[in-house]
Length: 137
Image 1 (cartoon, rainbow, N blue to C red):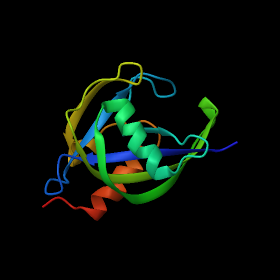
Image 2 (image 1 turned 180 degrees about the vertical axis):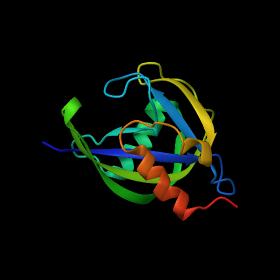
Image 3 (image 1 turned 90 degrees about the horizontal axis):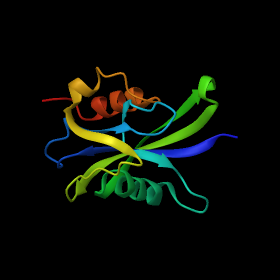
């Protein structure tokens, strides 16, 4: 059965969309890889509520005014992983903090550098779509 998931592209503020927050996964699949914060939508939960909750759970931030960006298929038979990811972008309030059961580290990356990383899932395609929406100055 295909699962529904969410991913968050977090910029430091609305004036600096060319920097994004990535986390390093501490769970399978793709354990040890950089990715966008996010996770599964719980039963009875909206995608918007899920992305806000997942950002708080993984990195301890309050995701502010998330806007929908795109929907991608994530099909990885080698992990028996089949999902549809709904990606949102926005800014966050608070100070990032590690939630070690979810992520081992986090870092702010210039968007052009993030696009060169071997990201988990299909997060590279999501970031590429975001980069087309907010091209670097």
